[in-house]
Image 1 (cartoon, rainbow, N blue to C red):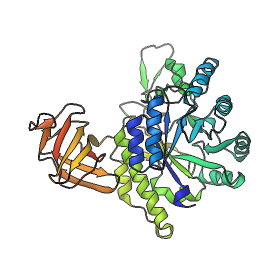
Image 2 (image 1 turned 90 degrees about the vertical axis):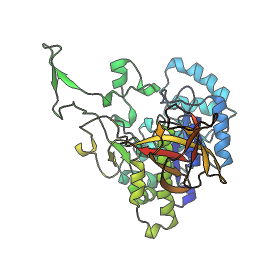
Image 3 (image 1 turned 135 degrees about the vertical axis):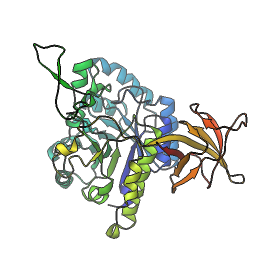
Image 4 (image 1 turned 30 degrees about the vertical axis):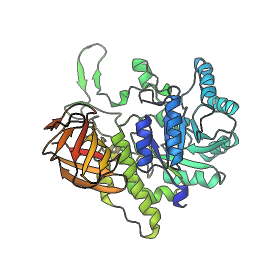
Length: 411
């Protein structure tokens, strides 16, 4: 497989994240519309935003996939039908779907639509792959519960033109391919219709029937128990194995994550993938790529099912909280080469004298101190910038470009 046929696929929870993913190196993006995807809590895109995002991506030679991966109930069919008619003119490159009835409906209304089978469909063997091929599915988003050996076995038994996609980074669901009823049972929010409350991350104690109100800890540590709390998937150290397994699309999870998260993760994987295809025989993993991943919100990492069945070492028994060592403090909007000042949109508080890191899609990060900062409209000199999305003028040590990101290490 060559670089042209190996895709880095990034999440786009809203229009800003879509553009960031494309700018920082994604070959394709996936997103939900305002209805019928499995991330109701993400910003998602209106039809006009999808049209703008698709144009932005296509102008840069990237692809756009729309997630319609809910498991539809009877009451969903009529509004889904109307929604498909309203978007049938969009130049979407594919639809990600799990429900056979939804596949049938999309094929009926948009006959030339490319169909990708969602991971929610639990695709785990080559006979099932053959069935979906007969149903007109172009790509299989594999269940996360497959090993490399199983993936190679599927690749060996399916038609050459059928593609395989797999998650390589992000949060792991404790239930089989995300097919979970726990949220629905506990607080009536259906995970299979996009409203999961993530009860697998909650703290649990034991209550005996005849002693209500008496809570007995399941002794993992003094702060609680997290018996369903998986580590995050991370495969950046295993790009050769991913390519050689027959996977042609490496998918990053995270439509509900920040633009800082999307840009950082995409950038690191872009560097690793490009380094591999530049010279596969002499490829060597650069630890700095993993260090970059750890600068965004994350849990401890695991390789999931790729090499073997996960064990207790793939669970986090201490906390369900994320590690957040860095803050996203600003986004460059423009830069004046002659004066060395950048216009920056503030995202979190920063102050004079603080050390920040600056990175972009085409440079390694560099470190500098904030020495000058002004309110853009008034020109007033500032000691700190505490107001969300305040527009600032800042002195930069090196040239920067629009969409470069400013971050600072938390103390």
